[in-house]
Length: 315
Length: 253
Image (cartoon, rainbow over all chains, first blue to last red; front, side):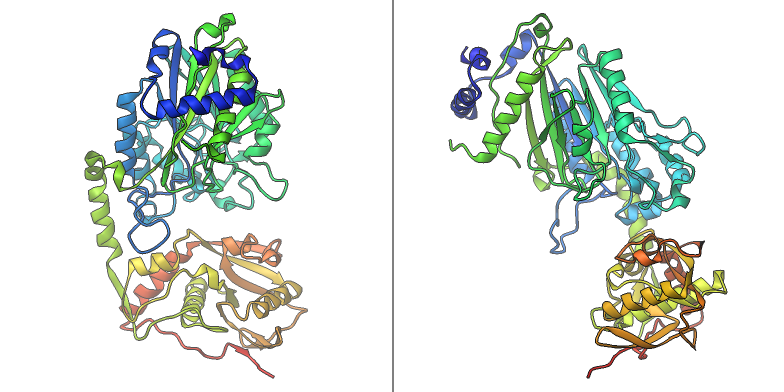
């Protein structure tokens, strides 16, 4: 097969050939499953951020986002993807709370119950998840059947003590996926009364610690950071871009906070000269991001397989 | 098939991943793909989820559509320097704040923070949520005269902001004849300002509110204070009213 030798060629050549094959693929030609059966494992990562209590779609009131979003639609889509894919991880990068009266009236229980129903595997905390105080979040946690991952908040002296985890390892068909979470600095952003004795720890130091642990000690095949730091800032404030450049061992950063509608994931060179990918999908559940990683079981022994993939039209 | 720059970038992304990760000791990523789903009507709906949130929705709608008070005229907001909405909002904050802290002398919010107008007639819980959708909490700040002067300069620069307990004239962007709680402003004195945490933390360019002499939390959301205020008025058989009373006057040459 042509694609098996592609990586031996220079990149320009590779891209050119890919473009050609892509045209064939677009016509429904080559199913990747043929390859997948033999040696590849496919992992599908679905993600949201800053859903902000958007239970129903935006009302049809002429505003920019009218008719978009809605948990029932997202649930239907996730269900469909789960039927098609064996290995799915559904993740959220925080700010689950605040934005509609559903939060004001019910305090977040509905958001967490529906996320549980949809089968979210993990989420991290955003600044708005503190809007009813640490106690307000802790009170709603029994409604979540998925873990809240945060490695740079110390909750030891708060109601959340022992109720969050720094990271979690998921196993899918022999793949190990390490996921950890990072929260934004709370001082100046959240009322002190609401974050109370929560201690904010340096996200870069904690990220390096968590990612190294997951990759080097736990031998995860993929390390994902759920970050509520924000995509990037004009000032020198820690962001996903700075995080990616200043760390090792993170493969993917699923971001939030800045409500950034990224058209494509962005690749940043990390401290090891490897790629850390950043992605973020706006806010309010207007979009669902999907990243498919294909892992090759044989490559451990040096055999390299590269395949051509369709270029999706972006919705 | 045309090969757009976006697609080109996309392929480069894949290629880079494939090169960089293919020889490590973990399972190697040989390729990856990205897709973004827009969540719109085409996605279909999971009816079990709708069924699940419907009771919450109905209860919420019942709650939100509850009529709690009445206006005798529309409370608008886009005019300068004063607005009916702004004056009602600021006065209601002062009234409710004083119930918790007798030392408050004046209040400040920002035009941008008030998110809607009130129609003439019935006012529902929903109207109040639209006016103040944020969870802002009221705080009292003890400010030096110098800081209050910065607040005054800010209000003048903005051609007026929703205030109560304070009056001023503005000429060429400079405030004069400023009174606070009925007394002429004295820069050598300290003053107690009621505002909300977002502004007290320096939001909306109000950097001058940070680092006050003292900060006291009232422990009440602005929205709750407004709901209380309207419920009180209704209990007393009163309407929600506001006047443009000349608390801020822009003097033309």
